[in-house]
Length: 120
Image 1 (cartoon, rainbow, N blue to C red):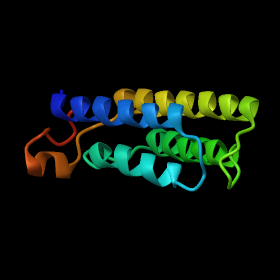
Image 2 (image 1 turned 90 degrees about the vertical axis):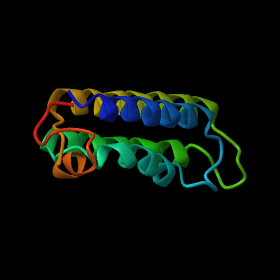
Image 3 (image 1 turned 180 degrees about the vertical axis):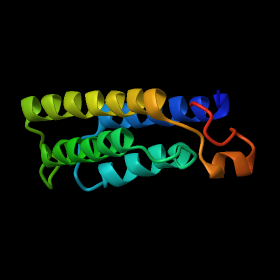
Image 4 (image 1 turned 120 degrees about the vertical axis):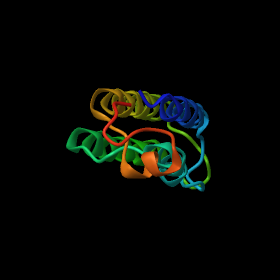
C-alpha cells in the first residue's frame, strides 16, 4: 500500500476541507486553490473513471460555494451553508473514490512512493 500517498492525500484534503469551511469571498479562486492542493498528491494516482467523475463533481460544488458569495463578500447564509456542505460531501466522495479505486501511477514508482499498480 502506498502509505506516503495516503498521508499526502489526508494532509491535502484536510487543508482543502478547512478552506471550504472558511471561504467567504469570491475574490479568491476557491476551485483553483482546492484543485492545486488535491492535485498535488493525486498526480501519483493512475486515472480511473470514478475518480475523474468525483473530481469533476467536487469542482462543480466548489463553484457553487463561490457563487454563494457576491463580489462585496456579502453572503447568503443559507446558500453558503448548503453549498459548503455539498462541497465537503463531494470532497469526501473524491477521497473515498481514491481509496476504493486508486492505484499508484508510473510517477509514484518513479519517485519511490509506490509501486506501479499498487492500491492507494
